[in-house]
Image 1 (cartoon, one colour):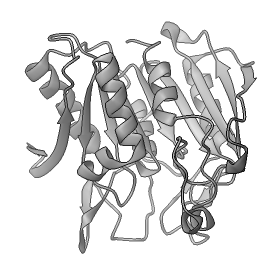
Image 2 (tube, one colour; image 1 turned 120 degrees about the vertical axis):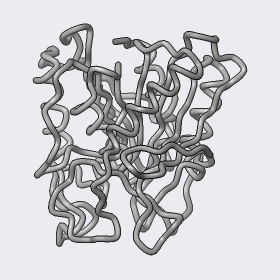
Image 3 (tube, one colour; image 1 turned 90 degrees about the vertical axis):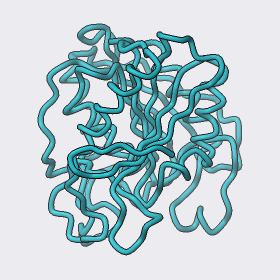
Length: 293
């Protein structure tokens, strides 16, 4: 892990540079941990390990930044993801995370000479919502985002985006923490804020990017019937500057990042089913590589 002084705060991040990375022209992917996570832990999740395997194969650089340390828990961190009215002080943060991540783009360019037209950000849950904030407030620096088990906050303190950006959203219809139909995050009291529905999140980016309003819909193969979920994609293409919006609707999916590894009974009872028909990192990277700024 490395440190960076930003806005009078010591910030932490990790960097993965595969041997296959092209000197002076590699794409850059930011991987954002979820709420309660940490940069180093993110590398060890199935999502993180999948991203490293893809980086080894295709030669892009990964940066895993870390959010603000939670009060009273040095191993838990959260992002300032545009939610307002959060009543839980342990997870509330007002740090300039957009500025921190934007600074890391410049730092990576100085150190490695990245391809600045191919800079992307993805994350799950709180990291997915932070990915939305990047799309809102730094769309001129990024080519695409991939938000997993996340929706746009409502109310939100985000500024409106200024530059078209391609957006992938991957959400479960039975997510108990980030409600697919919108509402309170994590519980009925809204102490952790609230979000709009997945449909409204998709509609916002469809309208902003001015894509086609009629999507191309595809039911993906149900490869693992025991995971109690299936995946349908809706692709909205022909947006401004070649942008598009892609929804992965995980029917029956809970608050889990889709991937090939099964989860235990305790987790499935707590946060719902995990889809094993697709690997989220592979799907998101395939989307990213189709778009440049």
